[in-house]
Length: 327
Picture 1: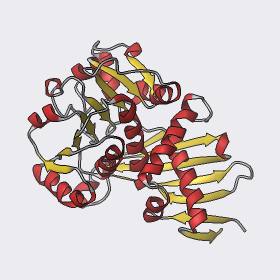
Picture 2 (picture 1 turned 30 degrees about the vertical axis):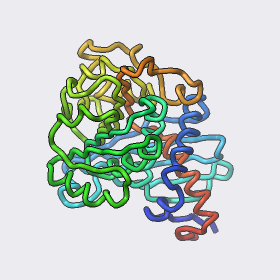
Picture 3 (picture 1 turned 120 degrees about the vertical axis):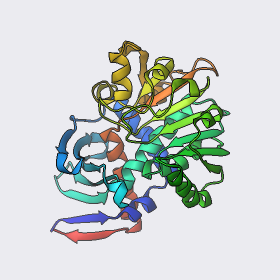
């Protein structure tokens, strides 16, 4: 009979620590840039009664002899009920025999691989001496971005912006013990003048701040929105930034942070200078001076999910994590 390994969120966290996830994402973006993956368009289904979307993302990487299918859902009313905004499962299938190898929680996997991608972008785009971070959002992506970015820069101060000051304060209280940098909850956008790195991890439909709050030399990771009508960052800021994306095809179809400045005539498609995989693989220089503002837009790529899941299963087999079920 066929055996499938079932992995919980805790198993996923145990199997792939953030430092290892960052290394795995470097490989993932390399495969994507070198076209060593099959990446069909993701399918999206709206559940309007629940203000929710379900996304199905298939991917195949021949080097792993595996294909994956992630089913993720975004239920926008969940945070008000103390439930995760994003939830999902990842299925791994052996492409040599068609047998399913694993089913794992993808809620943490998604937040982890997204933050690991932002960490790679930060590492190659931010100024080397960047030490102050600002994070918009207080959910799972904010937690993983705090961890990941502290691994690639010597961060000593982090400003946290939430839907309310109370939410930001609760985040600080929960996370300060896990972080060596000083965390400060704030609702004063003037604090952005001190930030050398800004991460937006929200589902905002309009910009979170005005362009004039961002100082020369800042690096921005915008990862929270993935629809054409949603944006976290003002178009005027994108227009004066040097732009890198995770996956050009998807960002030019889905990312409001890119599409709206295009529609407004603030940027052209050629202003999207590169995909992250190209920068990582070829060493392409994006930042020309310490005063440049750099902007990384991510909508998430299936290769990230499969690469993360591949290494999670590898370690889970080694450590005998999770549960083996006969089906």
